[in-house]
Length: 380
Ligand code: F6R
Ligand code: MG
Ligand code: MG
Image (cartoon, rainbow, N blue to C red; front, side):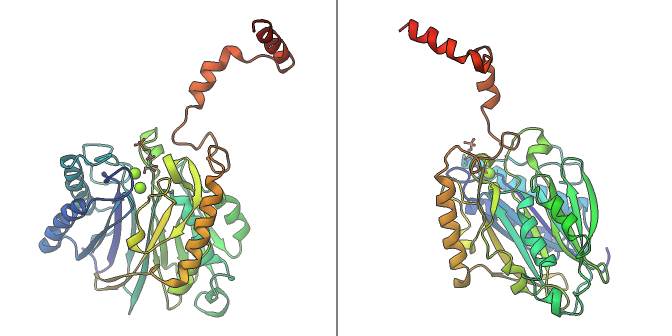
């Protein structure tokens, strides 16, 4: 047990009511009961349970540091309790993200997504947590880059002396499981060269360059790679510390005013706009989407979670939501065509190998194709 406080968010899709669109209240209650008991025993300082779409979100504070087996085990128990409810109610996809029955001390690699930030609490510690559904960790690349590296988003990069040196990005290669640390603004173009490939290179952590203060963490689990096959979307979460030498809450949220296209809509196989929504709209109904993100505002007080405030519950985001609707409509008109549909190597549902197999003997040299149609017309 150290003095430092760790904010741990662990999320999983363990079943949802009426398709993949929203967690059932009884599942939230089951997870809450487990965490409330752990709080009473002193294992965690505080907690909050919520959901975005079909993803159950456990937000916990404690003093045990990151990757602690007792904290991860607690989350595992809470997910199992919620999955049990899902099975009892015969909800859809009950327990889908609990890929292994045997818990081995750490949920990383098992299925649930994890973002953990250990901190020396500042005099006041304002934090924003982001929770998205129907997308992937790389969906946060664009907004996190803009928050910490784009002066057209974050005025403080230009006019706050404490931020003026810039930030360091840890960029994680989800295929190789390796990271590279890169400085901004010096290496900004190199950072962008990597993180533009959102399905592979993901911003995992951000540090303030002047003192290495850890400013942001993103969950990087990709379920489809963990399981070796598609088993559910790897819907991400992120933690961002704010203010007093870090981007202001308003600068952090500003990066979500543009509803950029992200991968993960319907069957994890389509691009759609990321729509910032209040909690009451954190359910996905149109074509299982469009992809959504909520933002919760907190103050951490000796580990206590003060909050949340539902930050996108603001008319200032109405226009972003309206734009997202227009973009959603525009993308949907493409039906099964790229670039609405993902490229063949990224789709999580596909019939392409089967179709190619079925047609393999019917492919002919292009210049011989007329013979096939000639033969066909002779048989008419
Ligand atoms: C799940 C998701 C959904 C499902 C779709 C098909 O998080 O993104 O779009 O992929 O509803 O689901 P199944 O194959 O379970 O019927
Ligand atoms: Mg799901
Ligand atoms: Mg989901």
